Image 1 (tube, rainbow over the protein chains, first blue to last red):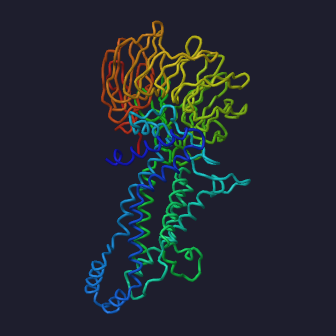
Image 2 (image 1 turned 30 degrees about the vertical axis):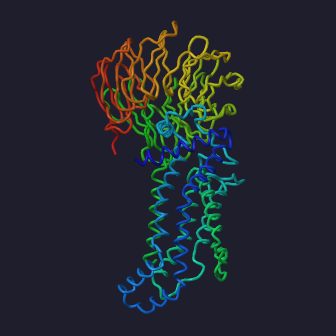
Length: 272
Length: 357
């Protein structure tokens, strides 16, 4: 089911784009970028719903009534929860609106990742799996295997710019793409962090802020490590996806650019 | 680390696992390579190369003694006339090794490590020279001591098939859709011949040229001067190397069809033969029978008229071309209960081999 509903359509779409672009050198990199854009457009409403939900939750942290119930029922968790649910209901806020779209997108991200790896088919077994994935109506024998050259990279291998000397822990050379992946992931995560620190009496908000803060550290490191280790085609996807995410969030007018500068005093971004 | 931070960390680690588990990126998985002489079978499978006694099915040696990320084996091993066993690795060091077939000890002072890609194809050894095609698109030229004797020839694409020679020229297929014809004296490649699709199988030498199958689903004849003629069209991609036996050319496709093309008449020797499952491996012609393994794990013996003589369910998937050792037919299924099995011509299983954990 996973194969039929996620992987197969994605691989075929990727191959179709690659073929439509002319299937020469550079085209697989462009196909990944276009493919990511298509997927981002399809999931745009989900992302927008996530941003909206997160904004509503952020605004609630500064709401007087919300702050009052935090203080009033600080020692009665059950009552506090009841009051919080009442406020959510009164204001039409879904507390899960910000995380449900993420959960829905997660399989798409994994599928996309697998589709790119499948399409690149580095070994005979991978090629055989690719052959099985292609829809019968797709005429792809003239484009298989995909030309994995893109800019200075081979999209089927980890990226690295050759150095004039050997560095033991950088066998592929200077990992420019991994750094860009980590940087864009950091920027995207930081921009979406709340503009104002949560009320210290609001325990739930404080814990959420702590979680977001730790994500801002782990996420760039994790994706940077992926970029360092895995085929560079994945890095192209990560960077494109991150940049589109940044653009989408910036378009809401809520991007908190001050968060990008460590130590700088946080301020609320201008509302549109 | 408080609970929420720990939760975030765990979620990310799970994501990392989910992504890395399904990538296949480590390039370690593939079906085994198989070669044999009259006494030993040589199986390249995962972290090891095994030598198996063909009389008993017992392991004689394995290389290396301990699994090592530097070595991942699935290229078919090659025996040379001067008593070496050559095998390439798809591990992190991209090593091409020479082993002593009797002991499994390394022959060369050091492996050949200059290639940038994986070793999928077995090298061709001819005129005391090793011609080794690599997935980096280069054909490496070495002497029998593992030293380069000429600059590698850049052919392009990924080279997955053993070159063939007619005694004068070298023929190398590539995934770049071309057949490359090389004059070994000058180490120069001529104008490549467009096959219309990638060719993961080797060319087979015939009179005045070579026969090649490809993902264009065609069997093509390429003359020594590069002239091309389509002889037959299959119903799907042709993966394995065709086998020439007298006037008949045997080959199979990914739809599971087995063909026997009469080269004299240009007609198929039988109408339709499609036992079961996609066929990647080349057929083996031995005696009066043709042996074919299919992806569904069925191993069959045919007579020359295309009639199934016997059929064995091995389990797993058969992608590796069977080989002959004395009177025995050896077959190496992938992901089966055993890694290697020996059958006689009547289809009786003589032994199976499963490596010790």
